[in-house]
Length: 265
Image (tube, rainbow, N blue to C red; front, top):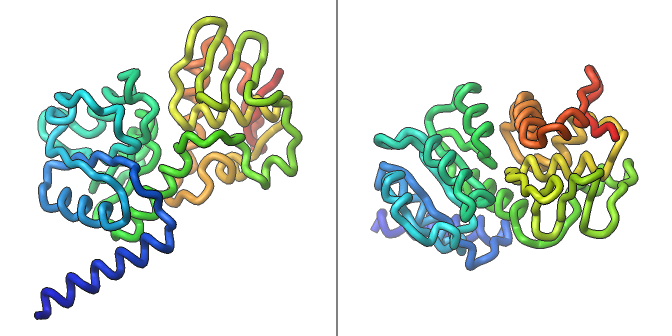
């Protein structure tokens, strides 16, 4: 009887969390962890929250699938067999079919170096074990909300009120650098540039606010709003990676020591 009571209470708590978070159904999540018990716990709670959840117990199992582009989120453990979660995440980022699907790492490896490595690969969030299911549900909702296909400008209201933008409709341009806010693509001339979601949002914000310096606080508010455990170096890592991908246009993203970053047109 006690076990049944605990199960009922747990289900009731998850249901309440789901209602509070206003979670949308029909979003598909793939959980990858070599600990089957943890997979089952995550699957149960995420499904109670309204998501469609599949599980895999190794990176090798994931790489054999041919429908990875049907997911809206990957949740990856880091320490798994021969192919780690970091390696799997890197492979997913290099695959055109999955390169824009967000990744959340779930791991006991919570040093700053480990987190920076995850973000450098293109992770959208990093949750350290042990974690509470409340935290997982909140972070999953936040990541999926940020990566939804709904058209939106990148800047938050607090930024856009303070800083006039230079955007024209849904296309932002500078010379032959062009980004499309609807289909989330970036081109230099005829060459498409493969950016992660964070890199895309940073570039869009910079182009909207040309020749203006944005403080770290403004960037965090706009790009990482609502996220916890965002490291100071996270901005630096994403901007360094963005500069590298933009080639000659990377030099236009300038650092103003003590103030922040901007796009100097």
